[in-house]
Image (cartoon, rainbow, N blue to C red; front, top):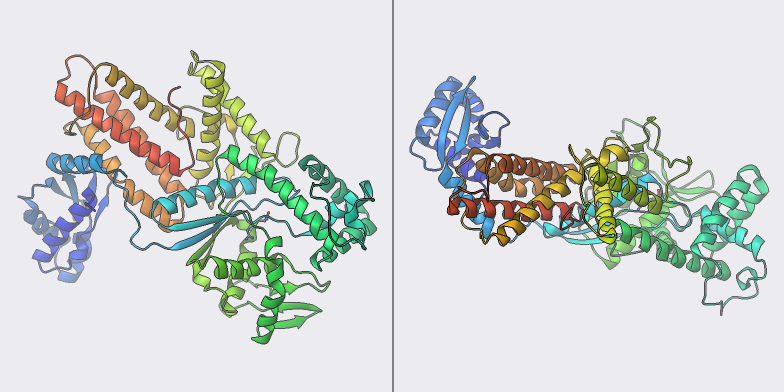
Length: 587
Ligand code: ARG
């Protein structure tokens, strides 16, 4: 694969240091936010080694670069920084390479792995909350990015389908329809194929039951009992659970497809329950478990811990397998069936201790190496009041409501900006849908994921600033330019970046691979957001400063600029797609 401008400059600088009998690592070039696009600070460190003044070393390095065709200027600044400007020839060559590359400069990772990403994680019957939304948006972006980087990625939604909510559902349904065969202990097979409940029933039954159980210990005890009977394998309850899961999955699939988020696997906690007894037997045999107050535990604390990490509870005193137990069984399942190198868990900060316990236990028991289990943590989404975000009614949000709110806000913004006005109702709605989704996803992804952010649809849907709609608008503007060019018979040609704004745009394009590689290494989508935004801004500057189709512009310049615009669009669309954002044709 051809090299980026940064890599080429680094090679030149490295060679210059080597000429002076200094380690070539000092030639590392970095992007500069000052007047020149690149800089090398190696002379400062090299000076120490050579026991010379940094500026003298810098001067010697610069001397080496004098006749270098790739560097138009190398100036010494401050104590011995070297500011670097690449030559037009180099940028021309690089632009040509990017133009010829299907992936616009994006390489495949040097080492590729098989990676399972566990994200989304909604709970059956319980409504989704903003944490599930964040997990879905970040997880989906990571799966796209990692796949694009060449990894073999398998995504799994890991449904929460094994807890107390199942006991609530079972008992509440029993109260409503006691004659169903599932509750008759004597009936153990040939249950009806059709589900006795719809998703609306589930949405109703769960809060009904949990509400009652809150103030009524007897009611709670019934739900708990049903949960443990289910876990102990009571046939009627197992059959009901299967219905609950299937009905929920059907509804969730609709929600997630509206969100544009895909999962390869729709497994959940219940799916690995059959693996638990053998797994625990093995743990016992290998001496990893202990009995403590009637519970079966694995100790995971380490001497170096700054905070106490309680033991992982495999089986509670009441005999139930818990969240950590199913997570361990899931690791076993994944290892046996998928054999991944790495497993990523995209789950909020609040579950840090849980995952630390699970990962240590997995390592200790030989299920999976600790360092290959990664908790991709993220912060909370807050309302404008600074508290955890909830819907207007004060409850947890429903994905479909959120998406329609986003679409309405986007429609308002389109009207204010006078966009999409001359289109039919259907196309307008479709554009508003894309703008709304882009708003939600980008405003989530552009935050450093570990921080909290404030949910503000008004701000997210703005067409100015660092927003999804701004980026869509940038892409649509280029599409419209390309259509105009076609109508005018102007064709793209070789790119010759002579204007400063053209050169800046080529350099922005050239940094794509770096952004992708860093975003991958850090598992940080905001790095990709930053790139896409910088690219859109560089295009905007170019478009303002460099007329493309205007009369009087020489044909070759027109073709060059048009090619540069098309190239920008291509990369912008790849970048947006990796963020899970769809671009409309026009707006
Ligand atoms: N269902 C869980 C919740 O709502 C999230 C699942 C996360 N994934 C996992 N393997 N534990 O909190």
